[in-house]
Image (cartoon, rainbow, N blue to C red; front, side):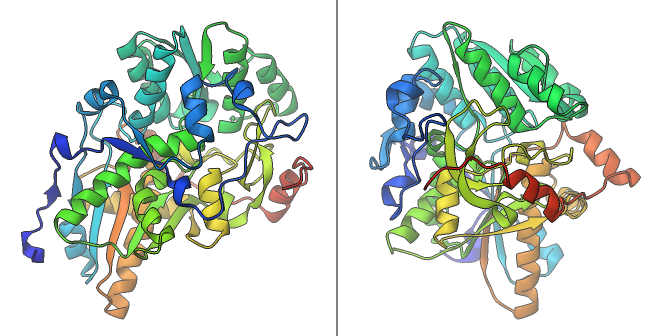
Length: 458
């Protein structure tokens, strides 16, 4: 189909929405390393994990071979409230940049949670409800995951306890109020409501918190309250599985118009939106059916891929979770309190870490002030106020488009716009006032944290 026939927004019908989630691990040559028991160093069994996670989610977490998991009809019916999400051709951005590149973005911000997080939140809440649980606990950084989970739990009648990273709790008061609208309790982390929280506060007085801290508190609460389980908005295999609906829809929409992207870009904190966006395209690359260039974009303040180490580490600061092999800065690393709260995790998805280690994708880190400059430019050109997290991908996409202008290459670029920034106006205010700084950890900071990695073979 000729280019002038491609609409500004490509919408799929409800029937074209994915009927199954795609498990990228089924096509990986080298599978992600297993989760390990920190005490014994042995791989965690399903029975052990079921003390923390919902039973069916554990099966999804451990399955490296099943390519397709049928999406339960109840979840598909919920998805229809906001899915399929649009794939947008960024004609206005292309014109402003005067680039020969063709730019597309998959927009996941058209629901009250403001992001892609609802795709996995409703799935995890559904399995908790199916198991007969009373409620779930979780952590949240920017607040998008906490908002999404509170929505899902409110819909299904589950209790929801959210531990929100303290700096985000203070920066985003309206985000936490939306969670309360849907019935969730929200606690700034680290807090004095858990034993691990008290320990972290004693060790790091005055800390602004991190996702690693909040995870520790949420896990402790889950295992000490009967009828509760812990759920996570990123990093885990099951989350990337659920988020594959992003990439599956994007690929279906592009295929309808005979478009093949050359470059696929996503922001990277724990890996949920990046993994979801690239899943079917990476599957084709792994199977030798097509080739793509994948770029993970992370904040320079928390550069897990670009400055971390591929090793086994705790997923949480309190060291109560299983060990995961991933690119990590060390579980004791607490990044600067910048405004991309959803990207402030010290590690990265084991799936994406293995793919990066094996050379299937690349990564870059960018500074906070550059990210907000790109976010503001995009808002003025495309009319959407983006979240700080998604704006990392926007910056990289703009840079690639500018490179195409310099070289004359007509590349097709796809990136994930997986969040809106309407609850991030304090951050935009600080950017406009000149108060925003770009803080980058020193080599000594990272080395100190990495020196505390657990001594595990693998």
